[in-house]
Length: 253
Image 1 (cartoon, rainbow, N blue to C red):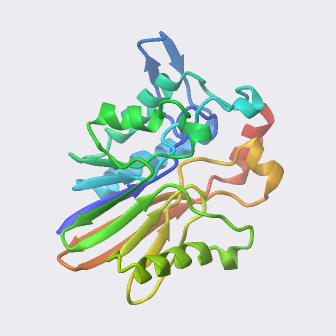
Image 2 (cartoon, rainbow, N blue to C red):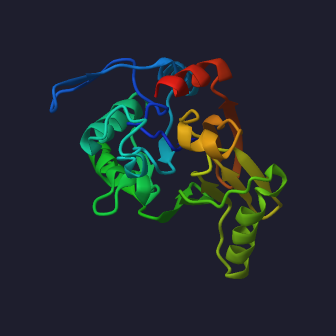
């Protein structure tokens, strides 16, 4: 049996993103310390690593790094140094007890247009790079993994885009069992007897950009698949950053 851990959207470098409790960038000689939101996320990351134990593979659905935030001139960032962000992501992912990483690229706004920070982090991990998407088969269960997924402000319609794509794949005679996506920061799943579509939770709390557009709080967490032959089961762990933490954080970010 294979155990597969799926995570997405770490957004390392953002004041709302994931960061270890003590990060020292040896290259830039810089200490970076957590705020309360990052501390809450990291505590849950540590708990995840302990609870899931040894996993055969880790699938990362993009946005390991948060980038420069050019639209707001770097506001809301712990650091805008892309290599520092890559090292932050690698440090976190190496905490997971595994020997193999599979990574797809995130949004260019975050990862970079010329050279992707996600690609750099994947290379530092010695992982398998999927670029924009990848088909990967675990035993006899095939996953199609990609970062981007359309997002609807209407929660009742969030499965529509993913199910449409699953139906197109079926019409094209593509034998895919699980469509795995990230990007939306909102956990969602749907399916039928042919396949399932799963949009992963994230590892980033609300930031100022999000709160200006939507009151919804991001879903944080991870998904574990257990696969044996053609059979599989899965379970999600989903949580939210408490409002009293991120409200205080947004005032001072």
